[in-house]
Image (tube, rainbow over all chains, first blue to last red; front, side):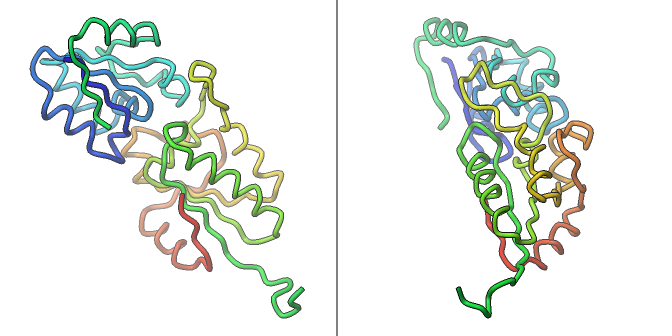
Length: 99
Length: 126
């Protein structure tokens, strides 16, 4: 399953819920304000780092760049463009958007 | 014009708590701040929680097809809006320092920010 999160981890609990309920081997794609979860020095990044043992984590690069966070990306996450977003959606049978 | 109210300067604070681009709040706040400059009031901007992300350096929005409004914060000085405050705890929780910001700000502790809020006549929240 592909999990998509678009809310800031320091404003909503969508990111927490996603990590709690995503099963091993799932993919997590962070877009819009959720990209802050993959920036170094945050509590969310520490959670994400731990979760990466079981989950594949992707981040939408244009959203990272828009927010001035391109230089602060947590190691180990995979940056994708809009084409990569489409590929991920096509590769997985189901998508769960954590609105 | 009501003569009694003419020339009264009130302390206005714009309290910014949302990240830019994901929602419209940050841009709307900036629009209202610019309008407020026309009224010669005592204006302060406060950035707390995700609001600190609004003034992070190096924003490049070409890839998301949205206007990059971050340079506008640097123009506020030209409108005599020079009181910008950032909550220290908000910066630290996001792994940021004052050097990551694109404008000169005063960094305040939560307690200092609370006192500053308490002395305002009007607080407008975004």
